[in-house]
Image (cartoon, rainbow, N blue to C red; front, side, top):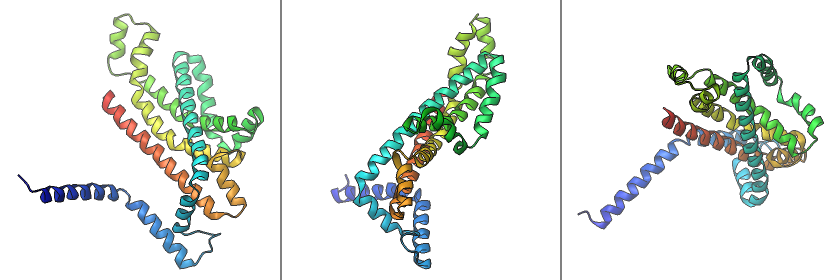
Length: 263
């Protein structure tokens, strides 16, 4: 049997190894912070032009409640817009699959909607819905709609080899083939669409908040920038970046779990 001191030493070695592996994934973040600090120090920038990392961290630590409330609003808006955009994309993809006539009408409209910059759509949507949170939700949903529409349509048109013939022989109806074969078979494609749309939902929410000026991190960045509170705007931008990366990592993890289950 090993001595207690030896067991404790082995435990610390394992903890250090795990911490080292975790830190290895953060080398890019550390490099960015080092370059950021060096750039500020070399050029002697005023805090209004470019604040140092320590000032931004201090701002976040001294006013956590302000940033937490705006961050929560942005995250909720991004999640709702992501869910609504994905749902609309899936529904339209199913309707296009079911109706060739609708396919000829809706597909060009979806492409046109994707080709138009979101900034150009905001005044139109605001005229229809007003300058409020509903417009921000609509903007986020529009951004998240197209990946779901494209990938869901691709999955519906590509059933597993031979499966459609088996269901046809068994006399399955068109709706039953959709429910039992095509929609479940489209899950891997939808997970890819989710991974693509997840960080875009945060970006769209920030854009809507920045231009509409109602609430959230985007609104806070616009307000702080107009008042030359650069430290506050950078702190909010850092939080928005962390939120976008977190959305991407969560969607990637969900995609990996889904692919392991469906394949």
